Length: 91
Length: 267
Image (cartoon, rainbow over all chains, first blue to last red; front, side, top):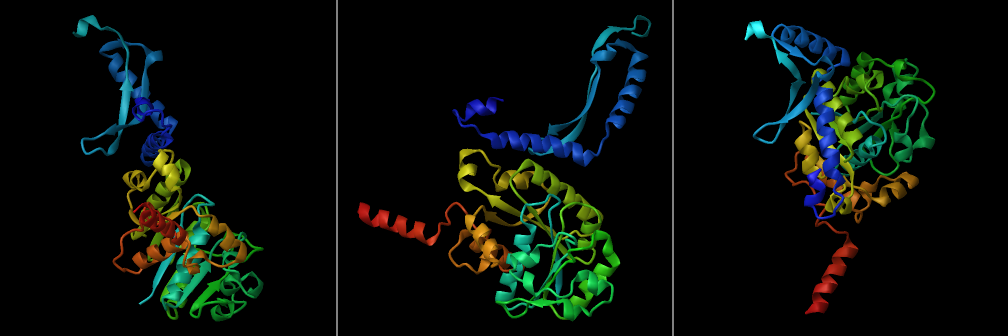
């Protein structure tokens, strides 16, 4: 959103369009369904739960884009896993 | 040696038919024998854009069903020699033709024509599959909007999957004043996103509406910027070594005279 400011009052909606398009195409090209993400989410939860106690409601898995050094975008699987506490006996 | 080129986009209303009419007309102006094939069965429009709607006797489906010979269905253009239209049927649907039948029609056209341009319907279903069946090359038309570029990306993927690997992009209806304000994606923005080479860009031009009203492709209009842009991309299509038209500096005749006047009066 700083983009708006940096162009001194210009609306610059093309940057909004470009960002939206890039994210959209990451999804289109990866061709992932909500069901796929739910499956990934479930499996990750099972594995991680063996080691740490996690906040299941806060768990978020999504496909996003990641900017590479040459300024192109690649799809990335992002998992945000809030930890409640570590399991003592396994540390 | 002849070439079959499909003009496609995924999204409707981005200018496939107008592009087909203009490229085809300019190819024939350059002396190439050119056939235009409308594959939008049920929603034909290429005949209207070419101003040939009153001359249709037979259509694509009649040819496929053996009601007439291919040559009987081809309509000769009213302005240019060597330019012909094969109209789509209006009262049938896309399932009236299959990809094998389309391929045999394009193969037959190859014997008499240098270029065969296929106007593809919107969408990715049967009509699209028919249109690309016999194609050597695809021109993907888009506009500088999120929805149109998204659909272009999908189409590029489908073309790759169907082994039509020779494809180029046409960006239609670009408004340079909006690009300058930062309110429209420019050529570089779109080329960053799509994995395809650029054939050409066409400016948004009111004259396109006027020429479509009359049924005369704008490419014959020496003065209009869109006409100039269509000539430029057609030259690139046939392998002439010209750069993509620069819409920023390319003014019409009147603007050029104006700027000339300004320079001389300021001296």
